[in-house]
Length: 356
Image (cartoon, rainbow, N blue to C red; front, side, top):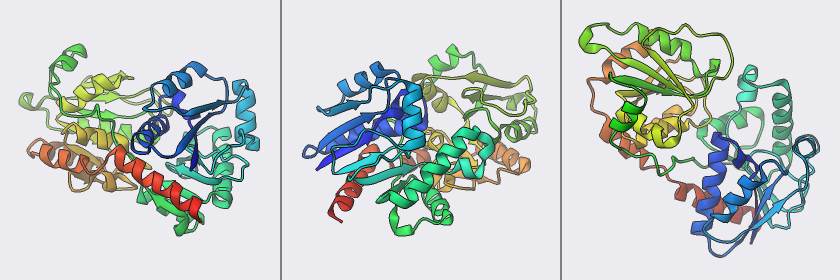
């Protein structure tokens, strides 16, 4: 079987980038029989794509289109003029489906562009909406990263039998470590709660900060709220002095931050999967997260769930979590997810669509 995969997204520092790179690596580890063709849509950061292909577990054929980023964007996102895959099945890791006789598989991570269009540009909403319509019409199988995303797709009108749920996983770097060096690097001398995510309304940071500010202020309970992630957009936040924004943090440091936190607090309004929850669990960190969308699927019985609209519930959970020992549950829940499982389930989808 000849398998084509669009890897264009690996040049970005996003969840889709991580999904694509880890999926390809683990497919090539578990599958020694089939041929793999990796497609990228432009000359954009060509060196990154070539370096990625060079360090893969075994040889693949890398297919790059000789287009500038603007032309590639125009061809891919407006007219679906991807290079015609010389494959039996083509996996669009981020929606864009080529015109081809190959069987088509695509992964849909979430429908934020429909549920929270204000978190996207008008162009992004239009492009994603168009791709979703094409996926509904032409994809032989759609991979949803959670049951929650599957439900959203069914609500959109896609048939349930056309959707396969395959969970993501955390990178193997996320495991319990000694946090002292990282805490010293970032000047974290007090106990702290941790949150990770782009600063935008969907992440619900204003309610998190309000909830944190309502915690008891006794000196023996003095704590800091540490927020990691790039600045996004939206209303300005009212930030108390005991809240620290660290901006972007590399994974090597993030592991230590998870490992040293009193709890990871993630009261987001909507997630297709919620990878930071799984990263925190993998580091043995107690998790407080929302009782909506995909979060209960990821957190299982290891997390404390709150109504993300309720500041009082978030405060109560933060006060209660310090008295609980959830590390064992966190690690047990994290072990239910692995990229090897993801790759095996994805390969099964390829095999099934080709046989149809």
